[in-house]
Image (cartoon, rainbow, N blue to C red; front, side, top):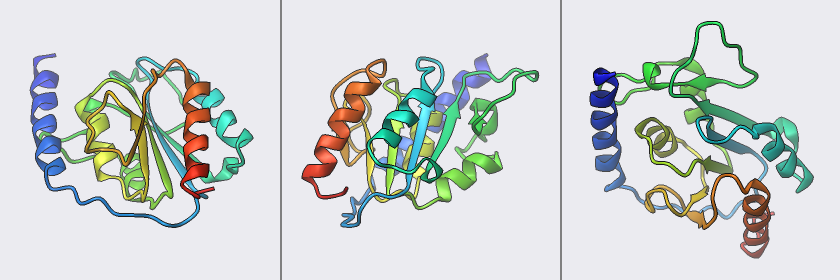
Length: 172
């Protein structure tokens, strides 16, 4: 327990330091591939959110999901790749291949679907090679290119607002 707290502090320090050097890049392309990072601690309707994206015209095969859990039990099985604090090193490196592969994927859109700042989630979001990042307004403003002011339980409102502004920005 205490070691996880120390790891959280060290990882947050690493993320905050790297966020101070962020250079925003502009992406003019249309959105075809989408990555979603979930915090399963507070939000369980992953499949419903993916269905909402599919209803808006994104192909389901072009949506990839990465789920964060505080603790993973050995007997649990998952439909999506999952990572936790155990999968982070003390210096903020990702040690699980599925999460590393997700981070290296050049998504057109990354949805940071969490509204509580946790070091592991911030790290994966910050390291992602996505060209356009969207998240909640309560998370660090330097992490996302576009922020929506709602809470994680209102996924339908989130998707409606997201696609309304993506259409305005000519990304769809």
